[in-house]
Amino acid sequence: MTTTSAPAPLSALPDAPLSARPVSPNTPRVVIGRIIKYALVLFFLLVVLMPAYVLIVTSFKSGSEIGVTGQWNLPTHWTTASWQKAWTALQPSFLRTFELAIPVAVISSVLGAANGFVLSRWRFPGADVVFTLILFGMFIPYQAVMIPLRDIVTTIGIQPGIPTLVFVHCIYGIPICTLIFRNYYATTVPEELVEAGRVDGAGLLRTFWSIILPISIPGFVVTIIWQFTSAWNDYLFAIFLSNTRNGPITIALNALAGAQSPDYAASMAGALITSLPTLVVYVLLGRWFIGGLMAGSVKS
Amino acid sequence: MRRLRHWGPGLLLLSPSLILLAVFVYGLIAWTIKVSVSDEHNARGSKGFVGLENYTSLFTSDINDRFVHSLKNLLIFTVVFMVGTMLLGLLWAFLLERGVKGEGFFRTIYLFPMAVSFIASGVVWRWLMNPGTGDDAGGINAIFAGLHLDFLQNTWWTNPDWGMAAMAVPAIWQLSGYVMALFLAGFRGIPQELREAAAVDGASTYRLYRNVIFPQLTPVALSALIIVGHMSMKMFDLIMSVSGAQWLTEVPAVYVWQALLTSDYSKAAAISIILLLLVAIVIVPYLVYTNRQERSTG
Image (cartoon, rainbow over all chains, first blue to last red; front, side):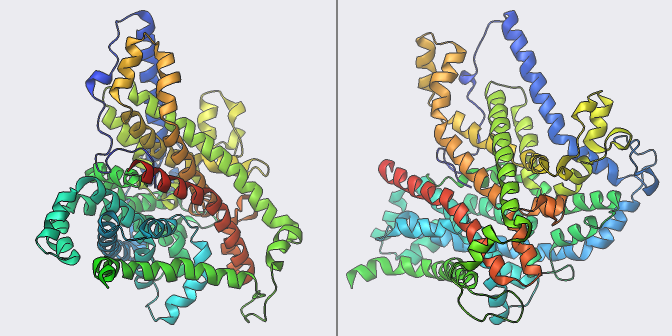
């Protein structure tokens, strides 16, 4: 996730300053323009929300109502039977996915903070090349490592399923977390603070531990949300390295919904259950979620 | 010795990650390359080195030109996906930038699909892109019928020629908000003085955007194109969720999975490396460019 001209990483999308809004007299042309503008934003709002409407409405229908006729209508009889069916199918993997996403979020954030700090302040010879080599790791198609990866995790004896997935998500999450923290430290931690530590004779590790980490909370919020969401929503690693008995919820949902003649009501209830944790994170912490999207700015 | 004492602690802090990435990114890529030049076509293992044979045979002797077909699918998907997200993203950013009451609300809604997995959204898009038409019309086709726009009804991703264009629709839905966020940040990054100077010069709104604002957005547009483009080449989850792995919608990322199911490791490795090269052609110059830019400004 990179952009070249995003502002400071965490100041995700402030509202435009009022003075930027053109002040125009209410000529007919301006009024028509305003009507078109609002018509368009509302139209796109409906388009974006349309799949959400279908998901919710269909998930509360009973089997007999799932047909071609009246597909778009509200249920005549609201029922939670499909939700119960979906929950029964997804519940074990739902809990497992927390066991996956939480450790991944914490571990890769800590690694990212350490790397980001070093790369933003200790510019050893070749630091730029090392940084570029780290970054490349987040763009690769993971198929290019998947064949030997399957063998190697077995060889080094990591338990299949969730432990394996925690391990690989932590590794392949290092680049994005490093990037976010490097930009965070480069833009928000004043050089003087690090210098002051150096003058006081604090080594790099002490400086990192007692000066930098305490002011890193905003960076951690961004990477934790980012990594939690990525691990929760991942399907590629999951399908290569786990199965429906030991894998995360995306695998279980695809098994529930991917059958030849799927039960659409249960599939949609399942899709909602699957999306709930990340949607809650997005609604409650949206500012920092967008921060993660934007913070990718390779250039700070 | 002094250099070591100066840089040592930093490198020590960095070293666990560097070792992990050296092994698990670069080491495993090298390993995959090795598999791709051997003849490991089944679970019995490899007999030896075959050079680039696995690569050339993908283009010359693959049954039904399967690999070329998957590249063609990827091309159609990528073009539609990139054009769609760029246009919608720019339009949404432009509309919101013009000043809309409740801007934050619209922004939140436009961006919410980013928080959902392709696997979950694929469930509903499979339903929405119901290929039935006429009396069997379901999903979006039923909406078209309701609006008396029956000529818009189509068979979506099941169309053998242009189905991949339909497959790009859910991807556009999912990522246009992201491109919008990039452009909004770009709009916000344009110095206020530039707009004021243009206003003092008496520039019309059209000329303000045409000559002042849009040129300033070029770097953002480049980033957006590269990010969306490389995501497109890796597209896997969405296709697996909407259609499952099948001939009609096969792209290289899915082909790798299918080749592995038949234990054809060398073929899967060769396709993976081609995919990696495709991504690298786009990403490496971009990383070098941004790195250089940063050094010159920062």
